[in-house]
Length: 430
Image (cartoon, rainbow, N blue to C red; front, side, top):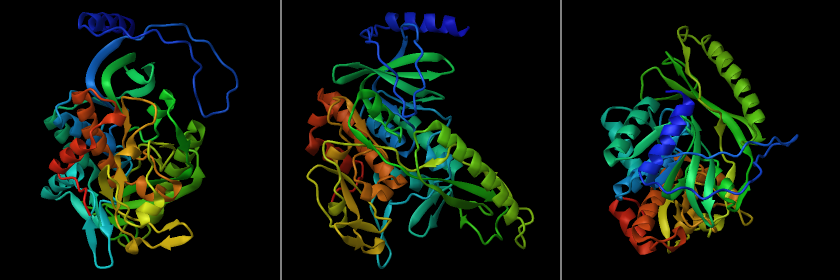
């Protein structure tokens, strides 16, 4: 079947299945952060609706995975869409395998901050010897994590859709009717009652017209070398002879500029190759080799939601409690706020409120991952893998409640949400 036939069949199938037609969208100008040279005019077209669900999760990284599993366990029909052909995003595909902020470092050791689905995954990995520790950080084997994330998703009943890129949303007032995706099957739409933006870059926030700021930060890379048991460089992993390497990369870079990202990717790949050749010169490392490089460069932060109630940096430093707390995350950096410096081992773990993952305008949208509402002082902690797991699980749990009770994201019953999270072994109390 060719592409044109596929679109005809899927459009007809959507009508036969009783999927309501989407409202005609008004003509609009495409959005881009790049300098615009001119415009071309596209022909008007109808986009076929090929599927529908209770909840659609955009992005299959740690936040998207946790959101999808939590929503599915809450009784939802969930579609999780991911542009790659594996789950985990930067976590598994780009070597960012230490789950930073899962534990909070203390003067005498560590204390667990992020539990729930994150801890469940770690236990499965530990059972098969695919979990090691880098200081206080659990560090996973990426291939094992990909496998178990898919297993947990399947067990929960999540429907995974790989190889698609979300490109737009269809709106009806202050609600999202459908998300438009593109892949090998063409340009199609999926309808849902609720949506969760776990794209990392807040793509859906942008298309819906939500409030956000854009941060620039370092763009670097992590990669792995093999036959490196005798190497003095890098960090050990759960697999004998495999070590993880890391570079901060370039400072204050724009992670939304495709030309810039391409330039950095090319530069870093050459650096990683040459680095592995240099490492082979170490005594006993003649057989060392470059095992893998990241699927995409390590963008740390881009769009950050201006939420109903952002996390407070001062509150994170001073153990602020939120009435609508949805979880804790650990502290992994020195925090400078209010003229004071809070050293990492002197800082407490900190709470994230539900208001920080809640948009101000759109009724059926939440966020999970590094685009939730936080001040620039907390960027280092807020973007970490542990924090992504926690915010994603909370978003998925809240979405299930919102759909079941037919309420907007801002009207979710906080007591019911917190009760659900506690039943999922999520830490909510000091």
